[in-house]
Amino acid sequence: MSLFRVERASALSAEEAWRRLTDFRAHGRLVPLTRTRLLSPGATGVGTRFVARTGVGRLAFDDPMEVVRWEPPAVGRPGRCRLEKRGRVVLGRAEIEVHGTAGGGSRAVWVEELRVRGVPGFLDPVLALAGRRLFGRAMDGLLGM
Image 1: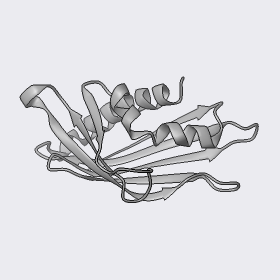
Image 2: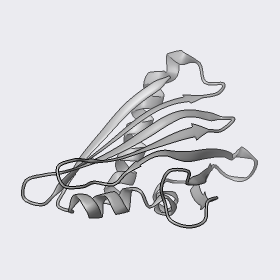
Image 3: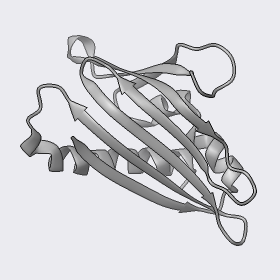
Image 4: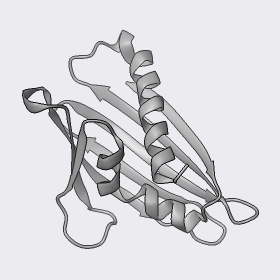
């Protein structure tokens, strides 16, 4: 399993950073060759399911996910969202945390643990590096950096 962590500081409030980072449709607009489709109608929260489709034509795969933890930020505690990846190609989980900071800004942390079927374990460091870069760019775009 590959494990990586991305952290960003933002002038946005914790609530606004949370709203942007948990806008799963927006993720597909920021990750190259990826489109996101919500499968669950209604408000986002525990049980929300969506699919990120990555690739081109026959060289594409689906990355279905489900929100299994949903705790928006509140006074004195960070927001936490956990996603379980339940695909045939990509398995694992991601956790998004948004902390309020002194002065009204926020600090966002994205931790992802993933396994890609068919990719040998010795390539986990390469996957982690690619994940840090890819999700770092996505976080920058979502947070307006």
